[in-house]
Image (cartoon, rainbow, N blue to C red; front, side):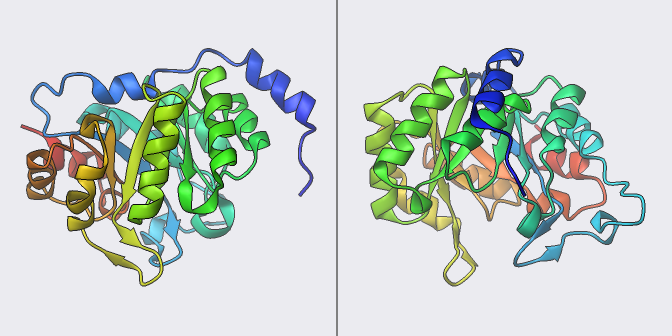
Length: 258
C-alpha cells in the first residue's frame, strides 16, 4: 500500500488540533479509583484470534470503537489505547479519529511504530500519544521518535519486556524528555506467550520514578491493581480482559471503582 508523501503527512500533522495531555491525565490524582487505567480497544490478537464473535467482520462492519470508548470514559478510564494494526489486530487508522471525536480522553495509537513517518501519521489522524517498543528499535530511532513526538505535542509510551531493554528505555527517556515519556513493562513474554504480573513487580526497582511506570498485560482483578499499588505502580494498560466481556465499560468499572 502506497504511503502519503512525507511532506503532505507532516503538513497534516502540524495543522491538527492540539494534542491532549496523555501523561498529565495519567498522573492526575486518583480520587476514588484504584488505578489510572489506559483502557484498550482491541478486536483481535495473534494469540486469541477474534476476542468476541461480534467483533468479527460482517458484510457491513458494525464494530463501533467510539461506543466502547464512551463506556470506558464513563467508567473512569484516564486514556484510551487504540489498536491500528490491521494485519494482526484488525485495527484501523480511522479508529483514532472516531474515538477522539467521541470522548475527551487522550488517545494512544498502539501499533508497530518503526519510522518517523508514522509519528506524523499518528498526529495527523488525532493521536495524542504513540507507543514505541524498545525491542523493535535502536537507541537512535527511539531518541529521534521521542523528540519528534514531543515536538508535535504528543506523549510517548516506551514499552519493553526484558531487563536490558527496560534499562535502555529508562536511560533514553531520562536523556530526552522524562516528563513526556511513560515507561511501560509488558508482562507478556512474546517468546513463549506467558503472562506474569510479577514481571512488573520484579522490575520496579529499575525505574527511578515508579509514578511514570505503566504495567501492561495480565491485569484483570482489583487484587492485581492492589499488588501493583503496593509496589508503587499506579498506571495500568488493560485491554483483552475488558474487551472479552459483553460490556467492557462495566468490566472496567468493577476493576477500578471504589
